Image 1 (tube, rainbow, N blue to C red):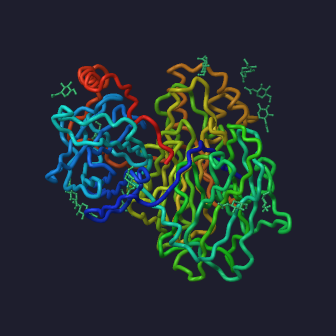
Image 2: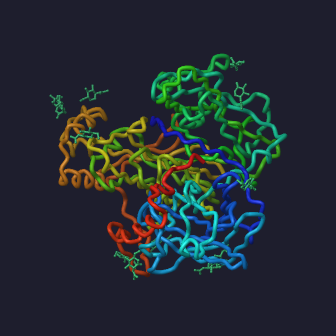
Image 3: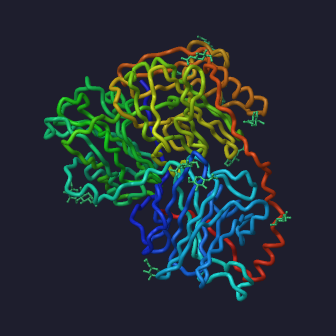
Length: 608
Ligand SMILES: *[C@@H]1O[C@H](CO)[C@@H](O)[C@H](O)[C@H]1NC(C)=O
Ligand SMILES: *[C@@H]1O[C@H](CO)[C@@H](O)[C@H](O)[C@H]1NC(C)=O
Ligand SMILES: *[C@@H]1O[C@H](CO)[C@@H](O)[C@H](O)[C@H]1NC(C)=O
Ligand SMILES: *[C@@H]1O[C@H](CO)[C@@H](O)[C@H](O)[C@H]1NC(C)=O
Ligand SMILES: *[C@@H]1O[C@H](CO)[C@@H](O)[C@H](O)[C@H]1NC(C)=O
Ligand SMILES: *[C@@H]1O[C@H](CO)[C@@H](O)[C@H](O)[C@H]1NC(C)=O
Ligand SMILES: *[C@@H]1O[C@H](CO)[C@@H](O)[C@H](O)[C@H]1NC(C)=O
Ligand SMILES: *[C@@H]1O[C@H](CO)[C@@H](O)[C@H](O)[C@H]1NC(C)=O
Ligand SMILES: *[C@@H]1O[C@H](CO)[C@@H](O)[C@H](O)[C@H]1NC(C)=O
Ligand SMILES: *[C@@H]1O[C@H](CO)[C@@H](O)[C@H](O)[C@H]1NC(C)=O
Ligand SMILES: *[C@@H]1O[C@H](CO)[C@@H](O)[C@H](O)[C@H]1NC(C)=O
Ligand SMILES: *[C@@H]1O[C@H](CO)[C@@H](O)[C@H](O)[C@H]1NC(C)=O
């Protein structure tokens, strides 16, 4: 049995409509309201020619700006700044922010290009584009995974009165974190008005004072669905005295053989239910995590089955509460609403998880490491359970905790990588999204999967272990697909007991506590850190696949060899950003210009 626990920090994402009164110049794949009544953004990504097209609308007739931030603030951000003058002429500039100060003009290569713009009803609209990676050290690559956008605007266009430069934006700025290359646009709730629905929601649960609580509640498929139905959309309902305390929800499916007393379904702290739920807690279905949108929808050709003769009868909703603010009378009614139809779609949705198990025997990571790689591998035994016509993968949900920095899964055919199933080049614990694959991917029997989680422990001086709390680590990569394969939920890799025993010169009495005790006592040196990574690279593993209660195991003497993708290199020389010193001159000029305003520009993360 392997049990997944997940924990998250809290930022509430309020998703809503767009504000701009202007129509866009063209249609786009995606849109978000960056700030209500102030700024909207539309965009389309063309992965074929690696170009992203933006259209930014801001409630001003002055300058407007959109930036790509490497770390959430203004430092090192790549910024496109533009305005439309009285004659309708559009000016657009490629700028770079060395620090919290006026971004300088990019004097290497100009990579942001405006195509058109206009001013109307007090708003400015500009359409522009950029390569995803410009290979220019005065730009920031738009990576797959989590991106942080910053935006700002001024009240006037640059003119002689402002020394022909942009004016300080003061508080007219914000940031927005999302996945530009894999955004899963939430549908409006109104689209499902009038449809049947059912809820798996807690009922007046008194949230304990403990900093970390995992509540597990068993639900049964509604009895009124005597014939099979399809869930076509779902809404995460955060109905709590303080919704910020709800860190994540995860729904599991119980094995069809599971039996519960229907008049007294289990409902308790998860730690008290591990035995009762042993045939449930490896079968992850849907979920939500901090930073995610509330509404999501399946494509027209597939639905999530429920009711009738569908084999799954029981579900577990696991909710992680983090009551670090110490709310004493917090009551929770959160959960998931499922919109259902009896108009069955051609395919049933399924869920598939790769990665490692959550114990210290899979995840024991030295402190002070910039990039620690943990690999797992799913051999073809698992994919032989796919139908011969294949399965279609729709979305990816990468998951690690605070030290996680990137997560990828590669699709391997005939010992050769074909493509990434999904590559979260940037993973941010505070913003966890369901990623829509840029293109759906078809998988076939015989396919194999390599998954890597990368961790950065430079901010730690103690060993990091696998586990459920946010200070422990996880490595999971979850996918939705159709048609559903009923006997496969996961393909999870564990370092083999014998490899640990040999490495740490332990006995057969070895267990994860023993590994923790030894690792916790190590005085880490550079040499030991390297040895530890080498051990991870070469250790034998056990891969476990199937469903809760029916797992098969495969021994892997080491991660199998595969021919990797060719490394893509910039055609233009890349430099390390010369952050220090270079901008002092500009900074002084800017400060004199604005008479000592303190620059903490763009630096606050919004609670979008
Ligand atoms: C634009 O901003 C003004 C001033 O804040 C506000 O009154 C107006 O409602 C905004 N326009 C829109 C469409 O939100
Ligand atoms: C993406 O770019 C390629 C190459 O320029 C072009 O052939 C294709 O039509 C573009 N796709 C879209 C959706 O615009
Ligand atoms: C990419 O394709 C789009 C649409 O086909 C086109 O407008 C754009 O110029 C192309 N960019 C590059 C760098 O080829
Ligand atoms: C570009 O601007 C920076 C300051 O922003 C300056 O240090 C550098 O010398 C300039 N490079 C060129 C080629 O003009
Ligand atoms: C939850 O508590 C409220 C207020 O005390 C009460 O009105 C409501 O009936 C309760 N709901 C359930 C399902 O117990
Ligand atoms: C929150 O839950 C309570 C109790 O079930 C219910 O009365 C209330 O309508 C819910 N509020 C929302 C916004 O769903
Ligand atoms: C697999 O790869 C080998 C070596 O590259 C090649 O000879 C063989 O034809 C490939 N098999 C298939 C089914 O593609
Ligand atoms: C380890 O880090 C903690 C928290 O940052 C600090 O209080 C402690 O002094 C550090 N210990 C060592 C040995 O560096
Ligand atoms: C190995 O096991 C023996 C007894 O079974 C015990 O005395 C010894 O301390 C163990 N060694 C280690 C390194 O755990
Ligand atoms: C795990 O190992 C530790 C340390 O060797 C030991 O104290 C503990 O009893 C072991 N636990 C189990 C369940 O074997
Ligand atoms: C780890 O260190 C503690 C405290 O120094 C000690 O009591 C314990 O025996 C050590 N454990 C191992 C396995 O060396
Ligand atoms: C990219 O650079 C790496 C490292 O320098 C090199 O091994 C690789 O062959 C290069 N790839 C291409 C496609 O040029």
